[in-house]
Length: 340
Image 1: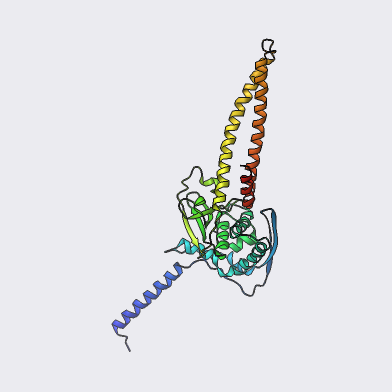
Image 2: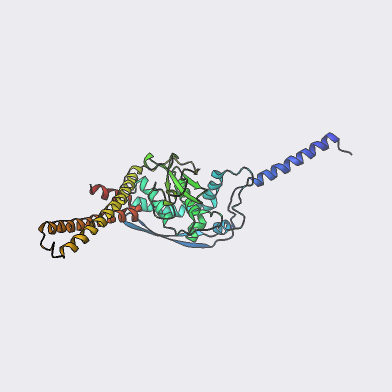
């Protein structure tokens, strides 16, 4: 029996549409970790990083099947059409195959937070410091799943930023990632106070390649770049905020003032040193050897120089504390306040 021409035409149209739909689905496929359920192998991940006046030390055991799946070639495919960056980064951070990894990490961090009575802000800093403690290495490869970064114990800026934003979002913080395409850089972000808000984004930047305060803008974005040229992609639906921005702002303002004061001080000390050298040479001549006024000025300038050196030492000590202990924000802030 012959198929009616109109029906045949309809079937052809349906086949074309079906093929188109199949192609569209494939083109809009986002990263997904394949897991070999028969693989029961595990690995131990060591955790060791400074926090506040303490050191966080722990070990977690992770299944390797999700890790092997994450490293499979092609799983981080980028959609050819209609790629939504926010959805892409969320797929990397939130892949359910990583749930065990997140659960193990949170068991460590939640226990530590409870034992040390950490505030919500300090918990953000705890997660940030953990990720910042992971060795930073540049890489030309595609972005890694968080489980790769955790098990391999190294990551590029994008790898570490995705891990941190995933951790924050999983704990119900309003978080995401800053992408600076021109600078080839990525950083994490958390909703915080206006004092450290980055470029009217509503979020405070968190540099992950080194220890840094929540809201501290990396040097890379201070010079030779249009640091306002960025995109922010939210990850998760968290609502939690970071509320210690006012303290961080005070710390960073004091640091900027300290650097400026040190520059002025060194300029004055260099000038004073030249004056002292000239006065000393004059006092060694017969003409001025017994000049009481010159002796007094010389002694006064020596005292001023010594006082300047001591002031410089104090400023450098303050800068050292600020720059080396961003994981101890409350202590740094209170120390600064006590110096007033």
